[in-house]
Length: 112
Image (tube, rainbow, N blue to C red):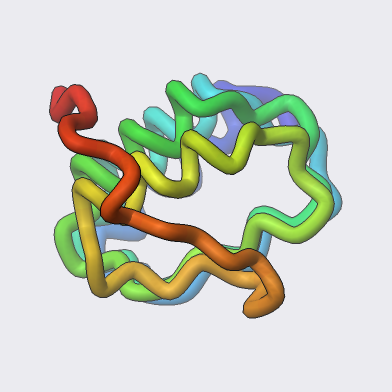
């Protein structure tokens, strides 16, 4: 789905709480659109979204204040990024559950 299509769809979905876009070719640009248009988002499934970078994830966690769960199975994101996401939102459930993170190792993470 091209970025314009994603933006058009999510801009009308302000009450969206759960989103499954796993296995797609979604990019950071689409995540930015989701982050700014879906303030009620609680859970997002991004498994194997290999075109998403740390920047897109940080924008999502920073702007979706109700986000509780994110599935990142199969993504190419460094573990340090996930530690940073937890420093922004400590209660965030990052799946897969086998991902062991230690938030105390990160003293500060840029909040945008």
